Image (cartoon, rainbow, N blue to C red; front, side, top):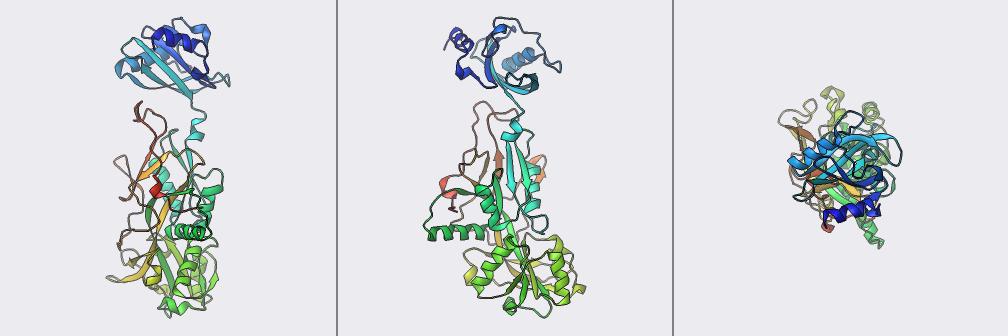
Length: 418
């Protein structure tokens, strides 16, 4: 399309070039405005010396972007045609071919934080699990100003997190356990439900079963008929341990309380054991010492647990004050995964390199100490089995004009059907 035709169409006020607070304008390298879809009064005017509220020479800097790199973003403050107030604005500028003109369109940034904010449901601050800390770690690594903000939200954990991701407004992604997600899938398949909504994005880390009891309890089988604390009601520990005890054929008397309270009741003999499923080392467990008269009880990896769990161990390096040097305690672990819902809002988070949950195949390693998300020389670092990237429209922090949003996880990563 010739420049004259473009100018005519834009100046006509066509809807394609003037939508709410988005409008297109064309300016030449001498600062003369040729087209403006929202302000006819400046068409044909010299606007070379025009400044924003902060004194920036808007057109001169846009010309520099178009001349020097051909395309890019420029931030300034300008009047929003809808609100009639001066607001922060980012304009995308691009040179028109080999001509001495550029075309630009700007977006007012007052809505950008809402659009690019992702609500992440995690764990309860009253429970000593690792979900809440992981949520804050992800936010610390992935937050990118107005381009992307991860908002950690305290949750209950377990199956409730799946329901929150599926139905609760403001919740976009969440953390849960692979065993719980697989149980939901199997349960729904038995009922003939095949709606594909929950997407498994990535496994993040392993959560180990920590079974603590007095010295007279040396086997998980001894807990039959006894009072056992399964952490807070509705938690991932509560749900998963019911599943494990059922698979092992052990009926217990379940109680629910914090780990701090449970340790005191253990010492007084009011309960037989307390259990927490969390990534080691767990803060509350690290406070235990041999003088407390408590120890970790082995949880053997047996045939009924193969589909959803994996073998691991608690070692002296994990808990030096309760496990003697050179010794370890056999236990089992479950994967902690990040999930999302298809169709509720655009998916700006793409996490690749991970398989689906229909057949869990996690590393059979006795070392799962890779759960933390850290910064490495200014770069985001996640456990090696997954990588996280973020993007929306092209923005100044690195994406070019031809960049596209990361694709949604492909269909083979969908396993839970809710």
